[in-house]
Amino acid sequence: MKARIVSIVSVSLILILALCAWTGKQPASNEPRFITVTGDAEVRVVPDEVLLTLGVETWDKDLVVAKDQNDTIVNKVLGLAADYDIDPQHVKTDYINIEPRYRHGTYDEQDFIGFFVRKTIVITLRDISKFEDLLTSALGVGVNYVQGIQFRTTQLRTYRDEARALAIKAAREKAIAMAGELGQEVGEPHVIREDRSGWWSGYGAWWGSRWGGTMTQNVIQELGGSSSTTDTVAPGQISVQARVTVNFQLENYRVLRQSPSLSALFRAGARAHEFSS
Image 1: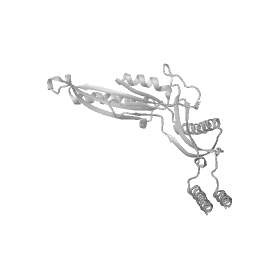
Image 2 (image 1 turned 30 degrees about the vertical axis):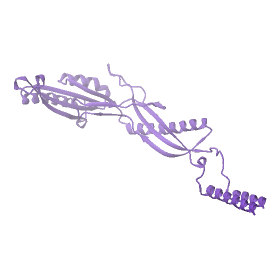
Image 3 (image 1 turned 135 degrees about the vertical axis):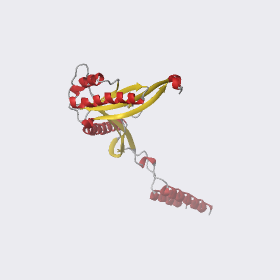
Image 4 (image 1 turned 120 degrees about the vertical axis):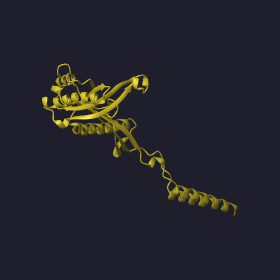
């Protein structure tokens, strides 16, 4: 009788363990596994346009005089557009500021210096060979600040698409190489994200501001041949960059161990019962 009670208890414990195994979570090794990589690419191209930002500053104790002097210079700069066959829509006044200035930071009339009038003119030049002559002419008519010179490409969309494609290819190659070192294979992409990169410029602050962002590329491609040199100006190349992050699923990973099935546990319980009987 005592042996039969022990047998029943043993079978009950086995059934409880079987039920726990059946209702429990699957082993972690059966869950999908992923590898996340970042692909960087840079396409270098010869610029085909230049953005020239010029500043005109005049001052006088008489505000009307200061403004008239500024307007005269600005009109001469705008007139250069016709001389260099620049479309009027590519010439604009981008910043205007009038500031009364005093000595020693006071506001006493006796310390008043005058009214300072400032304007910024942005010119987009599509013929880079005329760049240096245009700059010289602008300085000759009274421009007293060169606030920025930015060489650009009009085919930016095309080169961005190309850089993005190269970045995606680089990400996959990197994932294959990394997974291969661990004896794994790369499957289908699970998540693809494009990361922002590049540079920004603006002219809303005092005489404008400029910020540039850089990153490390693992793909660099040069396009567009060699750049032309105009007198002492060599535009060189500009870079169009792209970065993507891709999450790939890993395939053919090894399962370290399998949990015993429910039927196997029942069979083990039955054998234990027969043995105790």
